[in-house]
Amino acid sequence: MTIWRLEVLRLVRTRRLVAIIGIYLFFGLTGPLTARYLGAILGRFATEGVRVDFPPPVPADGIAQFAGNASQIGLLVVVLVASSALAFDARREMAVFLRTRVTGVRAIVIPAYVVNSGAAIAGLVLGSLAAWYETVVLLGGLPVGSMLLGVALGALFLAFVVALVGFVAALVRGVLATAGIAIVTVLILAVIANIPHLGRWLPTSLVGALPSRVRDGAPVDYLPATVVTVVLTVATMAGAVRFGGRREL
Amino acid sequence: MIVETAGLGKRYGAHVALHGVDLAVPRGSVYGLVGPNGAGKTTLLGILAGLRRPTSGTVRLDLPRTKLALLPDTPQFDPWLTGREVVALAAHLVAPGMPPGRVADVLRDAGLAVAADRTVGGYSRGMLQRLGLAATVVSDPELLLLDEPASALDPAGRREVLDLIGHLRGRATVILSSHILSDVQEVCDTVGILREGELRYQGPLDRLLVGRAVPAYRIHLRPPLEPVAQALRTREWVTDVATGDGWLRVGVRSLAQAESGLPAALAACGARVVSLAPEAVDLEDVFLELTS
Image 1 (spheres, chains in turn purple, orange):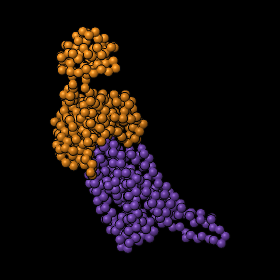
Image 2 (cartoon, chains in turn brown, blue):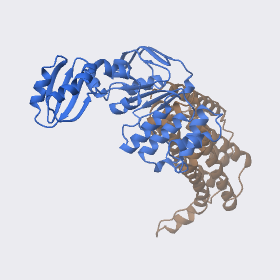
Image 3 (cartoon, chains in turn green, blue):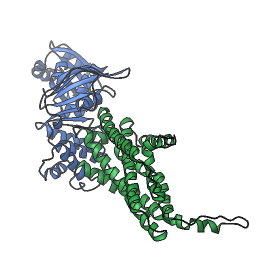
Image 4 (cartoon, chains in turn cyan, brown):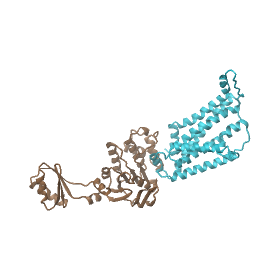
């Protein structure tokens, strides 16, 4: 029994892994479906004199539907699940059990981070595969390169978000406080991203990479955001270890 | 000494939790850290365990950190783990090379062999306490810090935990914090009395009790009591006689004089003796004296 196994068991036995995978799969399966039939569904509600016309759906619409839902509800679930694992000081007695048996808080933080970010990325990948498959069946083919790049950048964003959760958990004790502050921080980053020329440097720009790449294949340069996200991920994890290690119980 | 602190202090803002504590714990002892709620016991144990930093003073531990284990007052574990997994995790983290049967042995000693594969979410408070103790001893620590290990248990659970602690004697040094003085008197050989963050007394328990004992006998008698009391007051070795409901408390210059003279004096005045015993001073008396 290791801390790595402890973190895997935490995800499996508490059904949190099912929640993450399930939410991404759900949106992966329903996104393209919604895109394909939304026009027909809303058309049935048209009344006399009012007619709603939708352009014929294209493959990018299926992925856009999936990405839109996954980046909101999916992200919320990821933050909550990660907070429950990384805010391990929330209950002192449980924290004492682990902290008095390891030489540094790094031995607890790193497995929790890797396992939870791995679960989040697995959810995103499975959801994306489901959305991809269904989009191909219902709406048509998608550019492979753009899909892979978009999923990879989305995965990097999730890795950053889980690291951010770990950092916040080292500053506050409670699970809900950790989740709340992490979500607010992501929202603030998303708002700041609207400032011209600044958005391309922020991690939140990676969220839109998947639908954007698939839709128009525009040669948007994600390198600045990728570099900043990698740096911030490493920095927040280092902060989580540093501040977590200084906390008294 | 396996643990020594010098001038140890801890402040939480304006509140002084510990002040100038010079703790000295002999290796192999069962050290009882007693004091009222808020005396600083948990803070002191937290500092020794490395969970809190002292504001002033020093801590010297004559052992590696990995040979120290702390059991909090209400041990809690992830409720979806089994008892066996909790102890196995504790063993792996501290002593990864443990023989495979060690976990099962410790669970059996803690009386949890049957419940070992049940998730701890269904454990009673006493079972959690015993599981905590099992997870603490599985790595054979040299120093155990037990914070109020029996404070919230029913009598049967308390008995089990005290027996487990008793079995540790000779195998490890134990620092046991408690405000249940009878528990401390039963299992500890050395005590430290904390009050408002200050160590009021520290030393062997028997020296603490004997040093403060006023030699006296308590005699239960059939009435009438007063003639017996008057007869005893005339004896040169009797310092005072107090009467109660069916009993006399006879203060004496020495227990030796009373042992030889008291039976004869009682017989001489025709006392109908029900019982006769030297009066023991217990830790509670001393504790109240030192902390009041």
